Amino acid sequence: MNKIFSSMFVDMPAPADTDSSKSVGFFWDSDSVPNEQHAKRGESEGLRRKIHTSAWNRYEVRNGTPFFGSEREGDQFSDEDIASWTEGGHFARVWRESGSRSDFYNDAHHFLTDEVAALNLPVMEIACGPNMGLIPHIVAKNKNIPCLATDACPQIITCWQAFLAENPVDADISFASFNAANMPIRSDSVDVITSSIGFGSMRYSGDDCELGLAEAFRVLKRGGHVFALEYEREDRALVDRAFELWGKQNWFSGDKLNWRERFLKAGFVVEYEKFHARRALRADDNELGEAAVRFGIEINLVSSAYKLIKP
Image (cartoon, rainbow, N blue to C red; front, side, top):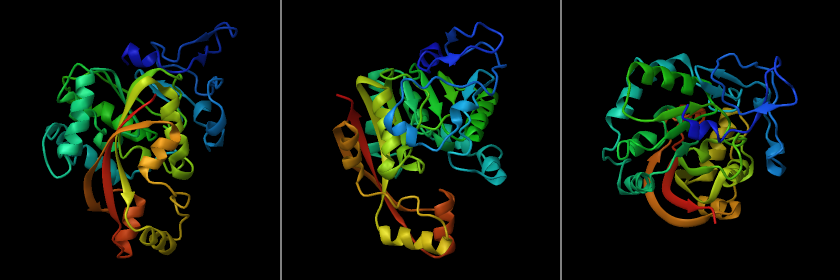
C-alpha cells in the first residue's frame, strides 16, 4: 500500500505481544495482524454510532491490504458474478475501455475524470465495485496519481488484486475493504474522493445516504473535493411495487431528497452538476434489478455528474 494511504487510517491497537500502552499505525509490513483486535473509535461520533456493523472488531491484513470485516455490509456476489469478472473478461474490458468515449463515458463523465487528473492529488474511490469506479479512467489520463480503491465487499478487492497481479498496469493502485458509511480513516486526511454510483449503493447508510455522505465530509480535508456520478430512480412507485412483489424491505423507504439536496445537507458546496445518462435498471446491476426484471417492472435511472467541495 502506498504510504500516503496507510497514514490515513486510524491508529489500531498494537498486537497482543507488544506493549499494550502503545498504539501503532494500521499498516504493518506483516500479514499476521490478529483478527480480533479492536479499533480506536475516538474520532467518530454521532451518526456513525447508528451503523449496524462489527467491521472494526474483525480487521486483518492480507498481502498488505487492510480488510475491516465488512463482508456483510456491501453487495453480495455469486460465483457466477465472480467468474464473469475474471474468466468472463469483465476486468480486462474495464481497462481496455478506460479513457474511451461511449454513451456512458460521455462529456459529463470525461469532465469529472479530466478535473481529477488535473488536480494531480491522491484519490480514494468509495464502493468501487467490479468496475473500480472512476479509477481506470483517471489513471488513463494521469498515471502518476496514487489511487486507493475501496469496497465493503472483500471479494471485489481480492479479485481486483489478483487480476492486477497477473495483468500489471502502469498505475499506482492500492486497495482496502471497508464500509464507506463507517470509514476507518482519520478526519481531514483525504484530498479527493470519487464515486461512480458509490454513495447510491450504500443501502446501510441511513435515510438519504446520511451516514455515507457524513463520513465523506468528515474524512475530506478542508478544500477537498468529491467527484461523483449518482443515479436517481425516476418513478418511486415502481420501485415500491418491485419491493412489494419481491417481499423484501424497501432499501430506499427513507429517501426523500435528491442528490443535490443530500450533498448540501451534508455540508458540501456543489460546484458542478450536469445530466449524465438515462437507462433502465438491469438484472446484472443488483438484486433489485433481478427482481424488477423477473416481475416485468422497468425502473428507469437518471444519473448526474457532480463536483463538490468541502468549505
